[in-house]
Length: 425
RNA sequence: GUGAUCGUAGCUCAGUUGGUUAGAGCGCCUGUCUGUGGCACAGGAGGUCGCGGGUUCAAAUCCCGUCGGUCACCCCA
Image (tube, rainbow, N blue to C red; front, side, top):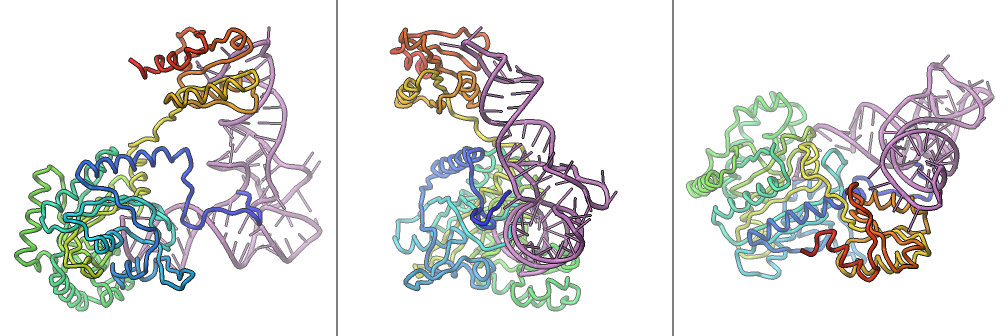
């Protein structure tokens, strides 16, 4: 890459979405939107930046807020942040607009985290997500998880593992955290050195440490399910029952601790088994029964998930699923006279609903037909001196070697083309 | 933030122990084809070898720095 002093490139951890990939992105986005809509979820778009306070509620001590957030003062010195995740903003919108519950919404767009990029991790990344706010019914948990499952299946993923857990309410969490800390402190010296400092700050994080020494200690640690009260246990039981009823395979993973502080009760994660990289969580979410209140709203339960588009597509790549859709150009107009016919016919075809394109700069017929071929078009319309004199168009079928080249009166091109493409029948 | 690794044409890469005008394949353009794509052949365009400094008679090749890519830790989508 020749980079002169006056050239620029995308900032670290960001990338351009170019035509060779963009059709696929549009396709996943559409797949997600229609699946969400099918379950009664409607689109919500929130700003890409908000008052920092909106996001700091997701956990002051978390890395997402503490060290990865793009924070800045606007020109009037208001503290702002580029959104690092979706849930907090949706909850802020809920508090601001007070819609009727259950409020079932979905979102998609770019999110920002100041991190070192890595496989499946970017500074600007893209997520789909849904949130269902206002109901405590465990069947909503099931509906949300099922929707995530449906999306993964719809893009053709097979090697996906669903992990679920329950964290109970905030009291459960507190009591568990307490007991876990005590346990870990007793075994402090057996832990991997790099994990010891977390015992004080984030005992829950120690649970999913990858270091072998820590893992063997953690194997004997108390589990959260022993701390769930009767209501939490019943809620979780109903969720598991629902997943079984819908034939969605899952594994209960009591050590599944998600990184954001707001989670209560059901938490879950879909991991791609086909992904070799360290970041194999393609979708993660859970219940957040205290977050709305944190943001100044009435006590309101909610649940949702976020799904990383980059990771989803990475997983599709490794399973060879969800290929890039093929080009959409149907007709190529080849004009070897002065280009007026290409100009006029391309326009005529387009306003008649046909995907049409053409060459510019007066290229040779050979070159124009080559472009037609590469575009993936079915049909080339050819205009030369002869066609001009006779007011006709030559029609060449590019994908059928048997087909004869046709000559039709110019004023019948549109209907002829539509017929050949099978648009009218 | 820490560590490892890489950085030569649009893309994938070759460039021997530092030595004349830096190469290949693919892609792109033109021609063989006097109005017709996919194949073949021929030709062409395109690089201050990421950037800056140093060592040397001489650096893509050695040294230092810097920027960027990739991967891992951490954390998470």
